[in-house]
Amino acid sequence: MTPALKGTTLDGEQVDIADMRGQAVVINIWGSWCAPCRKEAPELRKLAEKTEPLGVRFLGIDIRDNKTAAKAFERNFGITYPSIYDPDSRTLVGFKNLAARAVPTTYVLDRQGRVAALSIGPLTYKDFYPIVTGVAAEKA
Image 1 (cartoon, helix red, strand yellow):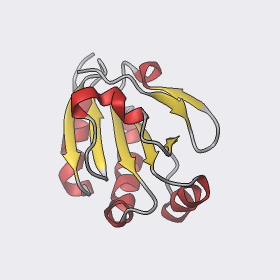
Image 2 (cartoon, one colour):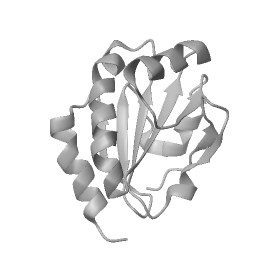
Image 3 (cartoon, rainbow, N blue to C red):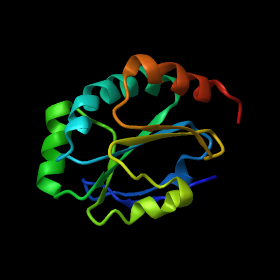
């Protein structure tokens, strides 16, 4: 299944997941109000830092939030990758039957844009690093 996701980031930029085709992509559904999201934020930051040199792209989808709180969350946890601002959770319909039902939820898309891995609940760097690097190592 290839999700169709696009929207406006917290910084006002347009992003479309289709533009990332050809690269492994990690998509994290989060909210600043979510305690497990705060727990996993440092793990995600480390995962992004360690896998970006491998060509892995990261995209957040901030749901049911307000922009000020979401930007403060990113600043406080040192999150540098973009996040779609989605206060109504409309972007999630792009995942169709795999749409997140809990927060946080993290998807790993392969180079063809298909969901290759899915994690519901807070992830850890130690557990997710081999998954992300495995997907990134696959040929397009």
